Image: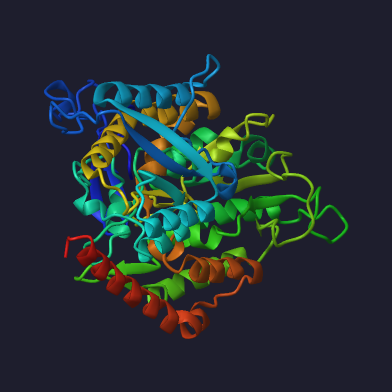
Length: 493
């Protein structure tokens, strides 16, 4: 979890190599006291720790930011121009940027391009030996390739950047490091990974029509730890069974239990507590998806999803012109948080739930980010102090005013439909998993292989490992070797 959630999540801790975890301060006795001293009462928890006299002499902090179309309309803004019509989140971003500009004597500008173009431009700057850009924010597989090509700076060594601070997403800091080096990460600078976090939306009208649990009952179920795979699929079967409109085809007018995405198998495996990769003692990735437990859990998932009216993936199954969830022809849809914002025109009310646990004995609800951007600093920068200081200041200020505005006001107050959904924020964002094999390194191979399983509804893990395991391991070894070489070239080895 990357957040300091002002209304829901009060403290941040790291649970495992790839999971950013947040501890919550609840009020079990209703007294208004958590029994924990609030650090905000004694010091500013958002202080970036810069020297009192830190100033940047008018330095232009140039951001290369990826286009939103690459990530299906997920909000990815950093630079904001002033307007009297800004929404509250954009206004918070504008205030963040203005504060940093005024406080540290710098200017912030942005170039909006596709991720491949950003990579190409930074590569040109690298070979020309020019210092043109201060920050990049690009999709995972592109940022990984940029790191391997020596185009990015080791964030562990960047002046004034403290990656232990809560405004840096600890799951990504741990997950995307290699051999002790980190060239890109997620942080509170953007809301992109919040917008791109996997969720389940639950249609109240369909639930009522089939005498299933109300949203309030579902929220209590989540809080009690009982929102599991078995519960989700039993509900989906109850709605999808007999859902044919009479033509024996999968199309508009049919009734479905769960609408799935091409990444749904990956999201479900993450939610079960299984991991596609792990780290050894040298901070080097190792393949995990061929483990016996992973194979067994995936077998269970395939069995659950064989019936397509229980688990429908429209991109592969049938011909559709309508969104079955919005037309009250599906009980649930597995989507990303941005879909809550994009569903403001939906007539029926819905609940917003975290991804389900595998079993009730599982300790946490785990969330997956299917396709989001990561920040990195071009290795061509000359003013490392300016760049690191501005980056840290922007990120800390964003944690203070932008993230709470998004999660606690925009998402919770404007886009969610009821008070109960707001309770779910801590479960949705409490344990977000950042696994490199399905987000950056070998993304095309591993992500592609597992999305193909959604189409075929078969467990092909062993075949995938036999076909691609040697290649993936070679990519991991090559990346580790390059990282060490790059560290030496940048003077950190």
